Image (cartoon, rainbow, N blue to C red; front, side, top):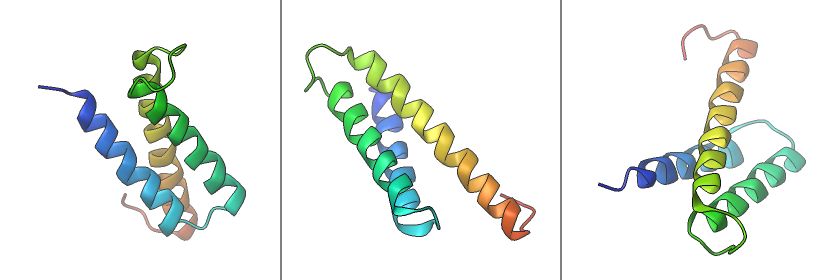
Amino acid sequence: MPYGLIVLFGSLGLVAYFDFATEASWIAKAVVSGIFVFCLASFLGWIASVSPLIGLFLLVGLSIFITLYRAWQRARQGKGDL
C-alpha cells in the first residue's frame, strides 16, 4: 500500500485550508503554496536532482507547520480545544 499517498492527500488538504481559511498574509500563503509545489514536484520525481524521499519529508514538515499554525491561531482566538 502506498503510504506516501496519505501524506500527499493530507498535505494537500492542509495547504488548501491554509490558503483559503486562515488569516495569514498573502505573502505567507504564496510561500506555503510555493513550497508545496516544490515538494510535490520532487515527490513525484519531476525534479531529477532531488530525491522523492526528500520531497516526502518536506511534505511532512509542511503539514506539521500548518497544523501548529492552526493550533496557534485557535489559541489566539481563545478557543481551547483543537
